[in-house]
Length: 108
Image (cartoon, rainbow, N blue to C red):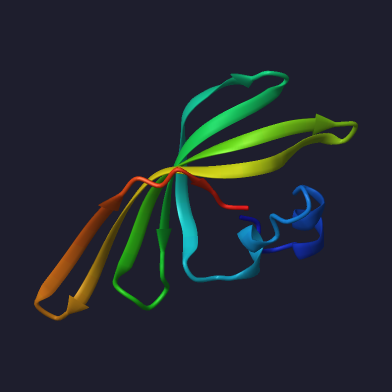
């Protein structure tokens, strides 16, 4: 989710999560922390994220669980699991489509 300093962003992520910062579309524009807690010895943070395309009439709102691990330098995202998502897109000039789907799979 960090675009300005690619090398620094990679240092904050566990291997395999580089897809978070590779592309610019869709891109995240906002997030809200909606819950947090622990799972064994790991911390999790649940977020509601808003993603959009730059030039296309498309948006995605998704709820995701970020599993966080600590190391000697601070914290890193270990995994992200999509909990729920909803998309809104314009198919043509007169039609807008909204889809809602529950996904119980991990991103990585």
